[in-house]
Length: 336
Image 1 (tube, rainbow, N blue to C red):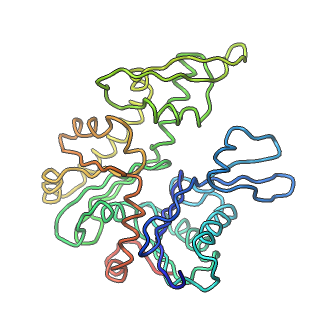
Image 2: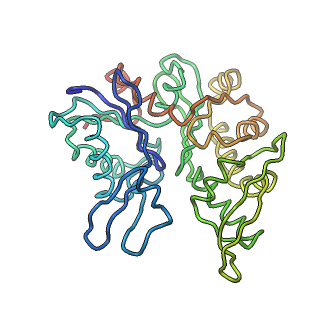
């Protein structure tokens, strides 16, 4: 394990680590729980996720990563250190760590990521843009003079870019993604059914019957929450057609951002994209019917994958093999 290069995907929802030669060795929720009285970190990851929405005033459960960047530095530092210790008990510095970051990340946000990972005992850190990593993970040869469009829909943000010759020709992003879908479900259920539900319930409903395009078979899901009028526990049933009503607005917002990116793309690269299609990656790419909606609105085929949520970390892992070449041609990445 000593001296092994690793790749990290700092996701808003999940923290993933790729170990060179072994593949993905960590895929855990990016959640941390803290005892407010002692400031002691209790559980991290899955155990902390089980506490989400079920804590007392003494315990705070939070996500130290937001929109692919660090929102709480001290908590993020502990989260990163915890997971890196899981894969290596040695105190010998690992030679290089590749970390994926959003394409429009600021210099301050980049520095925060680098410092948090360096604090965990890492000697050298290299940043790679998430769309570039997703393209590599999707099996795209980014070194050729050929345009490829990647749309990576995560939990906190949607990153998209047109890639050619190891670089980004056009990039765009928006803060509408998986978390926005959850918020839309919560608001819709409150408005239509007068029922208050939590973010975790909304997430489970989204996974069960969520869709951005009509399903062939109508699906139903039972929601449990609190009646907004009398405060008593209540259940109601929501179907997949109602789910479209809830999710169509954030889904269309992402589609519009994709259309804006296409409008800014040079004609030659656009012709390549029209031939090959748009590559859809990220965990929220699993939303049923979104690829169909995107294809119909852009008039361009959409390419989907079996495990789109792993494309970024797999691509960052593959980039370890050619990191020096990729580094020199990267638009933003730097060694630290």
